Image 1 (cartoon, rainbow, N blue to C red):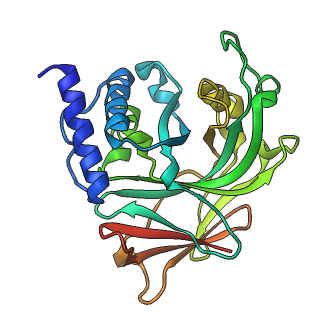
Image 2 (image 1 turned 120 degrees about the vertical axis):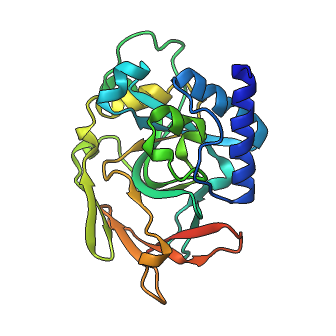
Length: 274
């Protein structure tokens, strides 16, 4: 079977599972060995999915894998239908795939403004910021039908939309603030589950923003804030009659409703409370 046929087959399996809201345990074909193979699968899946793209997630490739994959960042689409704006009067529900992979991660979000004609030079934080129209905090819903997506390296992650299944957009922040050094934590039921800062990334925010600057103006680019992936608790670990509560360092709170099923059968629900 040709590489093109293999990419199409894998893309078809992922799109079918996403539409059916159904997770699975085994990767649907030969796992991509390179980022080029992975992005070929992703491109096929984007075309099959046929939904408008609001922006792109940009994730970090672990330092130990940068040489192997030839890149320190990976990207995946954020579809417009999966983007939710946080509202003080509502508790938005964010779906993850039952029997698949599900996690939440605190983020910095950048909306791009007019871009330069060329990016063929080194970039610093100061160079990048003038091209960012807006900064906000938010939460990425990292979820895939493939339960093992986070266990096989960046190429497998890229192949299924970069392991993205939604974006919750929160309040705005000023680019003049030193948010790289802000301490970030994520708590579940009052217990800290993850901590960090964006400045701990080896190339800081400029590496991620420069990576997504090739996308069109007005698009949103999500860049990791520093708490790290926090896998969603399984229904069995959730206390009867209530959801799991989590809070990140900005002071917003959320609830993981792992024990309840959404109206879209096959999804579990993740919500945000004020």
